[in-house]
Length: 371
Ligand code: PRF
Ligand code: ZN
Image (cartoon, rainbow, N blue to C red):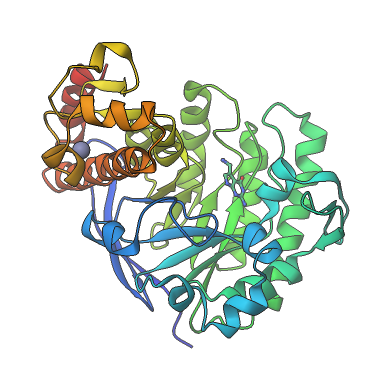
């Protein structure tokens, strides 16, 4: 059987571990390294699919946990799957729900079988197992799905993390067995192990022996320092096969994206650009800008003078500040558009830098301005 998704490595940069490649999926091919906008509830908040397409988004993310609770995976399946339900015909990736259960649900209790928790909306008892996660993701119908994992706190004890990693490996194996559509949905294994090199190695070894079509690195960007995250990536990325894609989960600040790419990461996602946009904070080539500040009241220049996105070509800081002050939703649409465009184009420039073997120079120049 042909795998549902295939990674093609085009080149590895000379001076860093950065990889240029592409991921071929049933809904098309996207170049890597890639940043994936987050559409938790089957929508990237405030933006239309046509807008995401036009700004160069190659793949978007949705969440098993949220769509299971509302509107229910059976309804999405009845609609013809996520692509048809939300009118997005390019690749979709779903997270398995474990991470969201741990961070959002009340009274959660993790056992060997799975996770018991209360639905925060109505108090119903719920149970998420590796098999249940597969059934939901099979019904939702994304191109790429995630195994159910446990994302423990970074600074847990060695003993706790060891047991957690071993359970996450058993869950990955159970998920692999339960996955009904390996011919058209690619399932990733998620490497855990917090900051312990030998546990990351054990996790990677277990998952690689199960031969997933791709691997995620989880358990990072959960409160540890950036130096600590880079230290873990330095030893974890080389544990993964070079002919499969590598996805660093939940990372989306410009510096962490570049740091991840230099260590051989191919895919990233994060709510950061859209979340801060809704509060009026923009990523610009000169660093972050909070457009609500009084100093922009009469500033008729664009958010970012280096940016040629729809927002920056057509609207001023003063106007967008006014929209935020007046609580008009068009304001957060404009900042959301800009922030996603900013990260997608940063990654485009990163890919060009890898092609030209000058990622280190690019990085130095970028941070001279970004600060
Ligand atoms: N596991 C899963 N989803 C995630 C994470 C994880 O460890 C993270 C950690 N940054 C974000 N999203 N399944
Ligand atoms: Zn812009």
